[in-house]
Each structure stands twice: as C-alpha cells, then as structure tokens.
Length: 345
Ligand code: 5AD
Ligand code: FES
Image (cartoon, rainbow, N blue to C red; front, side, top):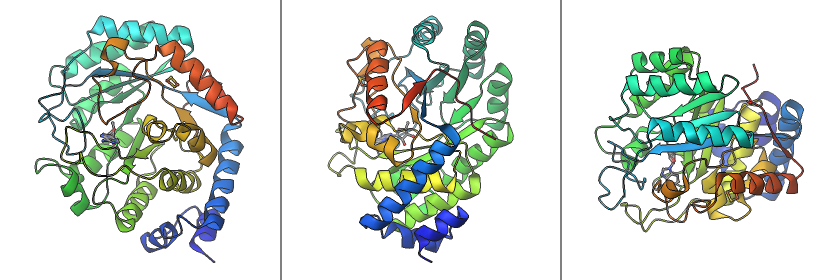
C-alpha cells in the first residue's frame, strides 16, 4: 500500500510515512485521491456547512520577537494599538447582529491585558451573548491563567505550535522561547477542557519535508479539535523580509492530509491562504477546510494588525466581509452556518 492509501485506511502514519507522503505533494494522482477523501469526510460530518468565527484583533502590542511576525516587539515601525473593553464589546455586538456565534479574541502577548482584565472581558461577553462561544488566541500563559479564563467562560483556545522540530523552532524564534513550553501549553489547554487549536505556517524559512512530517506526527499525538495552517508570507519589517512565501498547493495538500488524520477537525481556510491566492480560501474549502474567520476588528485598526504583507480585508467593513465570504463559500457549493460550530465528539 502507498502512504496515501494507508492514511485513508487507518487515519494515521508514522513520521517516516508522512515524509514519504509529502514527497508526493506534486503528484496529481495522490493529490486527487487525498482531496476526494478529505471532502468525503468533511461532508460526512459537516454536510455543506462552513462555520464562521468573528476575529477581533484587540491588541498588537507583543512582548515576543518571533522572527516571522510583523508585530514582533523589535519592529519599531509597527503602530501599536489596543482596544478598550467597550470597543471589544462593540465588535461583538456588531458581530452578533451579522450572525456570528463565535468571537475570537486574538492579540499579541500584551501585559496590559492582565488575567483580571481578560477575565472581566470574557465574563462580559458571555453575559451579553450567552449563546456565543469565546475563543482566545493570546499566546503562552500559565496553567493557572488558562484555568481562570476557562472559569470565566472561555470555550476554545488557539495556539499554533509553529513547528514541532526543535532546530526549526530555534530558526523562527529568539532564545527565550521554547518548543517544549509551547507544547506544554497545548496539553494544559486540552486538560482544562478547552477546544484546542494548534497549527503552523507552510513554507516558513527552514521548513523541510522532515519538519513538516514532525508537525503532522505532533498533531496526530495531540489530537487538537482545531488546526490552523496557512502559507508563510514575508513581512518587510522582519528578518525574513526577502524570503519567499509558502506554496498554495502544498498548503492545500496538507489541509487534505489533516482532514483525513483528524476527520472531525475544525479546519479554517485562512486569511493568509486568501492573501497569496485570490481564490485561496475557496480552494481551501475544496481541499477539506470547513471554517472561515472574517475580521470584526474596527476598520481604523485593521491595517495595524500587520502580521504579514498585503493582508486582505483590511479595508472592508465586517458586514462586507461576511457578505463577500457568503458569496465565496456558495461559489464552491457550501453555505455559511449561523451556529457556534463546536467540535464534534
Ligand atoms: N506569515 C504567515 N502567518 C504568520 N503568522 C505570523 N506571522 C506570519 C507571517 N509572516 C501566523 C502565526 C501565528 C498566527 C497568529 O499568525 O502562525 O500563530
Ligand atoms: Fe473580507 Fe472578502 S472576506 S472582503
């Protein structure tokens, strides 16, 4: 049996088999086989529904200096902003009217947002919108902080592991960041009952088929309910300014593999994928993705949440984004679902 057939039959492979499968990324037969199976599985569990998450980028202050990221602390040129509690709630109100039932609070690692401030925001959102899920995406915190946020009502947490290979992790991050810590955070989040999301960029500098095989093996072990992957895109204010962007076709191939490995996974067609290819998100849905994450951040701050160059949707009102996405999703035979879209057991 080929690695592709083994994956379809047993939903898991060894690291060596993943590496052997990834060598076939440009093989038309392998691509089609995996894509067809990925779409069959997503239809089996989710029909033609695509879940939406309203993304609220509430602070671009960050204490970390990840080499790939435009809002890293060392980027003096980044124009910093943080939303007030009231502004965050206003984003949720607008999102609620538009039909969003999940709010994703995403930000840099910003010490201004202490545990107490975060808990208060989470409680207020959950009180005003009891039918909505709150997802946090605010980086590495202690077990105790994660526990407090969970108690305040947070339902889900996104924390991409970025790469599961130690040496590659060192190429992407300064010395004060550790892969082991990152992984521990993810296990803590799962233990606390969060629907947990891991993930990585495709085509980040230093990535190889071997590091990608390690990423897939890690996901297979962690079994996250959500996986976020999108192409790496260079940012002019980082040391990777002149590196090339990740490949769309490899991203699509990986989306199909991840859908087959974790059939019920919540898998977004990311903004980064839509940035490197005008039809990237549609292609993502056709490869096995089942989530889209339009932007609910205030228009005046959109451009400031500048992780990578040429990010799309920075000039569009939340309502326009939702309408635009509804049309894009429909163009490939799916429909936007007005529900929380929790992970299936
Ligand atoms: N290109 C693509 N994705 C990026 N991210 C950060 N910087 C970039 C970039 N230059 C991703 C990281 C992070 C998520 C919020 O955005 O994977 O986890
Ligand atoms: Fe934002 Fe299309 S999704 S404008």
